[in-house]
Length: 144
Image (cartoon, rainbow, N blue to C red; front, side, top):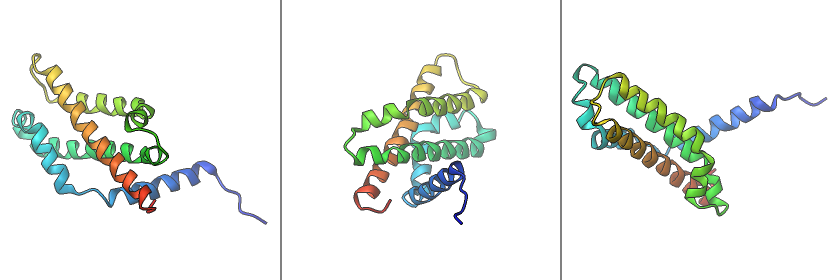
């Protein structure tokens, strides 16, 4: 007799395996450098929670990287990066809204809100493209 399988469980298992493989390409020092280059001026405004801010930035970079890496297979099969981004646009903007809300919690000037949102979007998009390109490379090398 065969084994009865739950396909959602199987899908989740495959997703975890692909995320583990994707995370092999990610370096924490690269994330720290990115956090400093994008958010140093905002982290200075929240001196009491600087470590928390850095950790949250790293967490959102990780999520964005994984989202981009999940779209790499579409690039392998000939889809352009912009089209692949369109596929993950809903998840990306949900992530962006959460990340921006995190920064709003710590407070910011009304004048710099649009600038802060733009910085958050650029930061997450840079990590999305990093994940997409890393995954595309893995697919091309047949390491998926």
